[in-house]
Image (cartoon, rainbow over all chains, first blue to last red; front, side, top):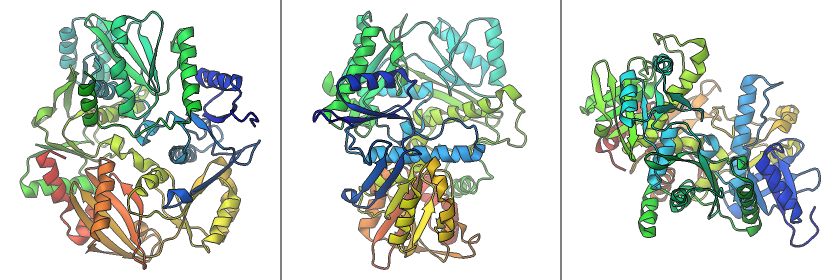
Length: 315
Length: 309
């Protein structure tokens, strides 16, 4: 346990194999802080009890770790939603149940804490951290961020017409993953037609070429050093996006297209490896500073109407 | 024009369609058991604007013409008559179909009862409790723990009046904790469970529909009246009046969660206190409407037709 009075104790909810978690832990340790790194804090060997009452001030929680009975937490970084991850040894129904229960408990406990929690997701992001491209596009539109056009259809004629309209080829992006497939050859179109027999597909008007990433940490945006000035101009919209979602940490993939800069996808569980070395360290430092700040940065997600007002005020 | 997305084998979807017919409101049913085989969908999001259509064999609907959508999340199943899906696509096709509809409901600017995003709080009961206690409603004294000793102490403190229930949205029957259950408490090491003091009193289910409140009192001897027959009891229902402050708290709660329709489970104690257990974003209101005659589906039909919140 930390003995320096300025030293703090941070709970990092994540995996030691996660680069971001690992580097935040190293930076915290270098700054003299104590770190507890676990992805499942509410299961053995931890002993957890939380008494919840109508009066918040009457709540009591205890969380015994191997080292201390109930460490006073000064901040939490969320990179895991808890629960078992390996189904081995479980009946699959029991596994799904235990996992859902653990996720439900951890979400609520994090909202009961008074210390900074980075990233404090609302229920929707907690349970659906990955969302489909059209949903991201709606969010981007609400925040005045440009995004490529999208079509969702199960009609091959509509798909072909969309591709012809874009004039630059299309990319098939499944709604339940971030994989992408360029649709350029007649063989691609034949494969797409087979999918259309069984499900609608999502096509976006952009070739799947290289992108750059920006990470929003608190009120800062972190870019790679060689990023185009047009991309940096997105900063106000990106901050609005974080406000809209009520979170302090989000990464957005951005592409420079023939039509200009376009936001492709958001990731509420950013991968620091997507940045160059300097930006990686900037992200890590900014996260640690948020934890150290003692400020509870997370706030409820903003409704779209509040965002339009904010956008108008910032113009 | 109203769009209902569900199946006629679901009693709530069926009631909603019957009500819309009876009221003479124009609607279309997107039958999940026939989707996507029987439908052609095409919608775009271009320059921030949504446009497109849904076509069935006998109708076509422009997305612009939809005033409101009523959605039942009936899950993915092997519906009879559905076109066989190749093995390598099976689960993916189910998930993609579901995600495609969810994305559409999220993107439509009209009233949607209810969007999946707004329904997610129901997947964590204690998270909902934190939202509920910000209102004037009370929540039962609760213990969430993975510690068997803490459960036994809680049991003694509550003089044995303890129930246990799931923390998540996975449906479970609320059960009374008995001493005989102590032998199983070692399983808690895998993860926490939720225990609550048993609140005596009258069960009241409140349905909020936009600005309307419909309260139903349920007299039942069962711990969980929804399963009264399985628990050897009965459940009798009748319309009830709520104190204005409680009705307002229910409306505020549903609005704060952006739910067009909500089923709120309350209990009124003999001392006149009001406890809230849960806010259900996909309430099975047909059951209550059939037992009490309250016009819940008609109120929802009006909201969907007006198309505003």
